[in-house]
Length: 151
Image 1: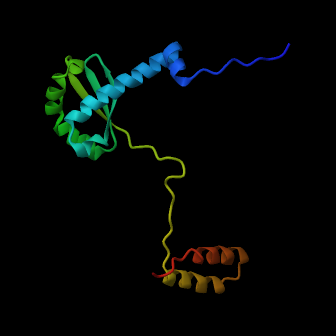
Image 2 (image 1 turned 120 degrees about the horizontal axis):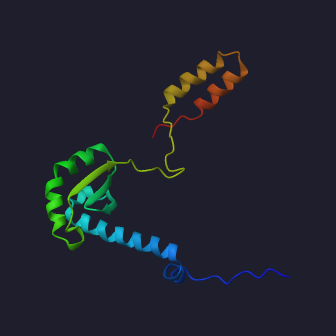
Image 3 (image 1 turned 30 degrees about the horizontal axis):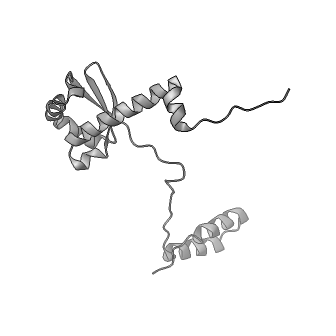
């Protein structure tokens, strides 16, 4: 008996037919729509720092990138709540809650760059020449090799 793999389905077909995927996709679309409504009422500078996390039972939960933006948005909370209540989607809005969650860094995106002047490199190299321990000397020489040439 040979194994016959199932034929692959297009992603659009899976999103329409598979119940769990359909529910997730529908929820994502709903949050995207709510995000656009919230963005329409925020100042342009605040839009990139504020995301809709959830909306249920009159509570709108917004995730903010840092405490600075959370404080600024809390000062505007009453105005924002009044403006959002004008939309049918937020008609029963009773409370806005702000949660601070710093953005996650992409792996490899945050690289530590070492800026070492040529003077510092020369000092490290001269120190390495006076060291008798071969491992320490090699480490200092590698460190001195990181110097940036003067432009």
